[in-house]
Length: 567
Image (cartoon, rainbow, N blue to C red; front, side):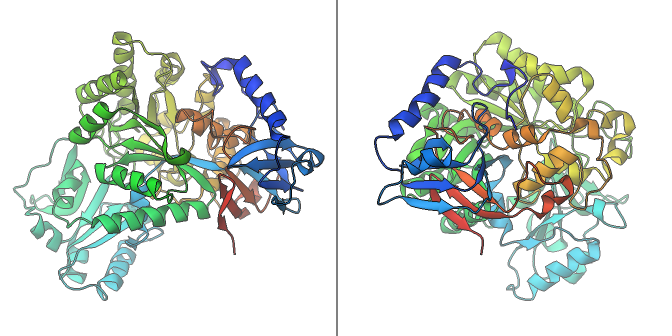
């Protein structure tokens, strides 16, 4: 098994002297002989994601870093009186997985909100809210997330009537699974003074009945009309939510995460947790598109590997369009199932250019949400204009999602040096209805991993949790099979776009590290790098594809410390 790249352009060491890298990797084991290791792992099949030594039997850790990978004899030479020796009984080890696009605070609040994932009807949604209302004081807000009308027998947008009738005494806001639409009840609309006279904001839409009354569904920027009147969580509640989110990530084998849009408060709390030694994860935070917060960070400058390599703040999260499921993704041509619309622009292209230009000057990466083919084209156009005006080596600008691409735009990623940050689990969730939205022709550019990889770019993988489940192995399976957990469809959905297992592993380890300027510290089990790794119940690189969904995380390690153990 060789974890190699197809060309030098795909390498995460692009722009770095290969000679320097090789010297560093070969010198580290020699230094390791000078002192015993803190931890030795052996009797394991260890996939390193290091092309120089892709599979080894043992490794050693000292002071939170890998100091040796190789055979058992070499590892035993580093065992001292205080060394912990971990015999894994032939289990599989991979580098710690990184979710390259997720919402950390969103997961923390989701864990305490009404969970609406898996609901198969609007009645099911209402029933779950009624159950929560029984134990919630009257007048207190109820929040929920996870409904998807595409999973119901009636796939039309719901209206608030049934929810308002069943829960009249609590204002309720229920966010759609993708976070780009919400359903609110009458009490919530009264609290927000949302009436038939309220106009849709730019980049959003208030759905209304033929008589002009709000239906209760708010799309994209229209969600803010209600969200602004919800009492905010206290600072301690937010901090507790972040800690709960980190613990949940560890449970699924994540040792790193790229937080796609962190507020000023959340960034402050990350630093506070870092000072307390409680971050316990490699957190690459993207600053939310909020003018005062951006101004403050542009003055301050990037934060790189702070608090013992647990926090990076050196990127900005922007939004170009909405989501496909709520028909907010901006398309070049109208939706196949709604010819009156071709989606929404959440931000004007001029705003993307203005913020990205300032970010580039201040040394920050820009990562812009774009799902539809028009949204992606506009972002690539904006990036191209910026790079011509201010040529910058190794900017690593990203497009977040890059779900639907016109064939003309696929080669532009490599040409511009732009990284498509994608979430394979979106494909296995959306494939049941994406064709209804897009039609057959546009599906050829949907979730087009192989086409992008063939153009010599890398694809950092993620989940977009809490939009999808936290488990990164769902994306691993989707990447290599284009199937769901039940192994449907037979042969895979547009299987020509599959990744290899080597690529899928890299997408959530070394490629994710590269997308965050972390490849010298993270992403592979290479001597000198931080000792983040995961022990799995079976060998995901060799078991039959249909068995991948049966894999469990047995333990998660960050800096050589055990942060999760399966009971």
